[in-house]
Length: 461
Image (tube, rainbow, N blue to C red; front, side, top):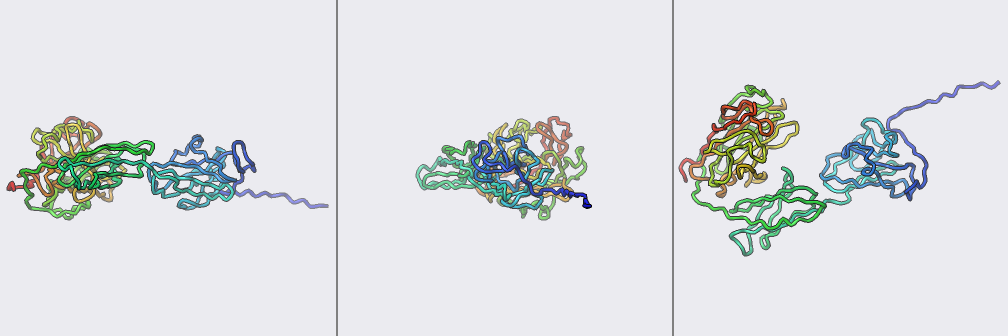
């Protein structure tokens, strides 16, 4: 008699195991062999939306080989994605392995949360090609084309109509990020920026002995934009003086150990907004070329702002009401004799970033001042281990504040400064340095008439 043995089937469930599709040949609409009806690239850069088929589907370009172009409008440190067949997460290719750069081998059955491919970096904007071989599971990401947008123009000088012209420096910004620097040609005045993505750009023009200027340019369809001619006007230098001591020797690094002492000392913890908005100390000093400001503060989801009055010869700049400004509009007013002419501000949140400096060029508008080299300002910020207390340092050349040339100031120059914590748009704040009545944090209008005075020139020479 035959002896029957029970058949035992062992089923091993493993993440990302070998996967086989249907052995299809030339499915409808395709000219090449494949095991699947379709293939998609789905990732964090498109919201993991499997239903967005038209914008994620891959093309079958050869037997078992798929491709798709994906456009990124900025460099990417890393991207996460899966390759999904048949519009079904059950046929998802990913990996449980480590990051793989821009090529590697995927694994099948990666349909659970995670198990995605992490690739990168993608060092520049442009169209990137994703290739995938469904047989070998090899994938590759490569740059196909870079942005082709261009901005070009010409710089002229009001008092100099024959070449060689002075050399102008043109700085290109997008949002608050510095992208590139160009110099104007001394024979033609021409300049240009290439390989630009679509978007809105700011250009800042500067040349020694001339007033700076700026303009805004938009690019679409990677087109070329003629920004036209910018004419720089000479600075009128008359009745100037030079800074007197005592001087400070400050390195802008977010470390206050090189300051002699705070100009105004306060205590972190005495604000009605607690450590979400409080000022600890204000530092102010100068050397022969620059004004220095330091601020010790604590904030979270609030703004820190420093207003500066220099009473320079530009009678059209400044505002008496910060609530009307196009940048960090807050409910603070100023005395007639001390309008706010410059503003340093930052919104303090989990996303770190440096404060920015702007010139208040009219009662309602501001102009950004780019940071970078000796002729423009420097700013630095540091954070203590608690994650809430910040230390800001700023260096602003006198040439920015007065426009009289390097190291020059108006006779008997005095700089007035007030720092505040503020809430959202059109709100006031709980505290200022120096102290001002009305900084109650309730949103009501607050007059900032008490400002710290830094005497720059004492003898008018």
